[in-house]
Length: 140
Image (cartoon, rainbow, N blue to C red; front, side, top):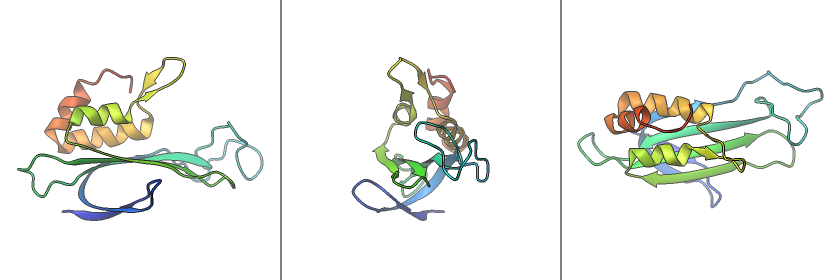
């Protein structure tokens, strides 16, 4: 059943009517890894900063060509920090893997845990994503 998602983007909120295929989050409430109320700059703490990932399908019916929506959101409760969000659309399941893949300056290539979880859930529901998930060439 389609659901209405209100997704933050740098340009403002976007309404998307779609099927939820997968979601993941690195949030760990009440699991602070530091002293004080908020994590200092550069220090990881999944209670202060976390990532959320959604994989949606905007197609009207299962027989239509998929219209995937990938939404990533970097959340923070640290004063002065802002949300980092990105909304991408594609009809390619392989491109979903590419959109979610992180490439660092030192050459590392990986799928963050929330992206990997969302992708695994989506692979269970969509055969095109399943093929891309099984044949991906990045570390999980």
